[in-house]
Amino acid sequence: MKRFFLMLMCVFAMSTVVIADNEKPIQVGELPTKAQTFISTYFKSHKIALAKVETELFSKMYDVIFTNGEKLEFDKSGEWTEISCKQTGVPAQVIPEAIRTYVKNNYPDAKILKIERDRKEYEVKLSNRWEITFDSQMRVIDIDD
Image (cartoon, rainbow, N blue to C red):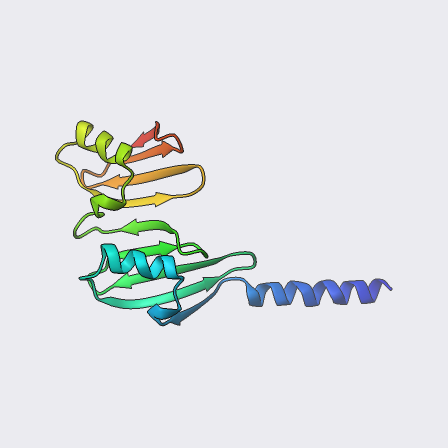
């Protein structure tokens, strides 16, 4: 019985390794509808170099890389989780208003080059090399240079 249990655990562990961290290129039409709409709304003039899906054990993420090096990341439902626009700056329309206002008032000469979000917070990276973290109520909770 112990051997059977040990073999079963080995098979499970090996299958978990195979399932985890699996990336593959996809066509843009295979992205979730929300992600496709987001791209066509805010990045319609950008040319896509690569779209890919990353499947992990309990999650799925999508990456879109443009020919100018800018990058988008989406969760399994097509909601953006990261926008990196080091050349042009993140489109103002996708940045929450409270974050836009804070950056404009406190760093008027800086552009937001990257924004990341999760359930608890937003993190922005500015062109002046500052990184600012906001909680879900858009209060500043950390500033780093």
